[in-house]
Every structure is written in C-alpha cells, then in structure tokens.
Amino acid sequence: MSEIENKIDLVWGGEEIAKLIGRTPRITFHLLEKGELPAKKVGNRWVAERGQLMRFFLGGAA
Image 1 (spheres, rainbow, N blue to C red):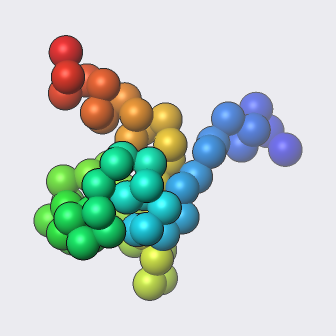
Image 2 (spheres, rainbow, N blue to C red; image 1 turned 90 degrees about the vertical axis):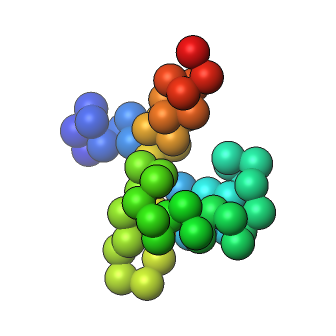
C-alpha cells in the first residue's frame, strides 16, 4: 500500500456523511445532489474523503 492510500479516510453513504457533518440525511442528500459538498457518487452511493469534508467546513468558518 502506498503512503497516499494509507492517508485516505473515506466516508461511504449519505447517512454516514450526514452524521459526520451534523446534518439530517435529507438535508445532506440535498446538498450532495446540488454539488455543494466535496463528495462524488460511486454507483448508487456517495463517498467523501473525511479530511476534505473537515477542511471544507473549517475553511468556511474562518
């Protein structure tokens, strides 16, 4: 496994992303569909990198 692969921490599924960002699944799915969160759809599931989500929200708070 490469160094980059060791550092990637993926969050799979809209419900799990919702828990991480402290929003309801309904609001989270709306934000995901509008492209307002740093995530991608893989098949029928959303996936986001935990660090990118945290940077996204911390950057917005500054």
